[in-house]
Length: 79
Image (tube, rainbow, N blue to C red; front, side):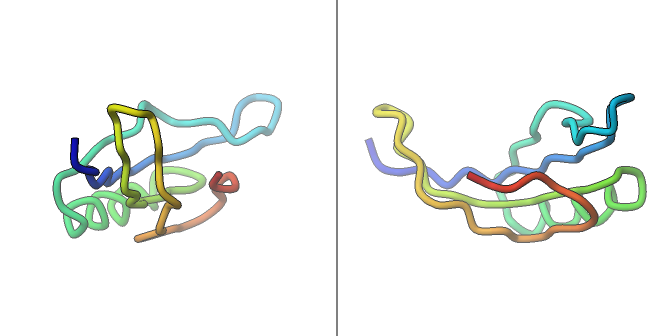
């Protein structure tokens, strides 16, 4: 199976304890420009927003390094 490109947007808020937590499940997109547009729209509504892309070989569970497309506010470190 050929590698696929995962294009993902996540937003973060703070829990009652002050920790960064996902505001909702990660959203996957087919196109980078749509992910960036969505992330920009979400930036004013959340503590942090992150859009990134990475190559993945899903059949063997291997993922390449993430490349940040858009970042605003506070977000956790990417692994």
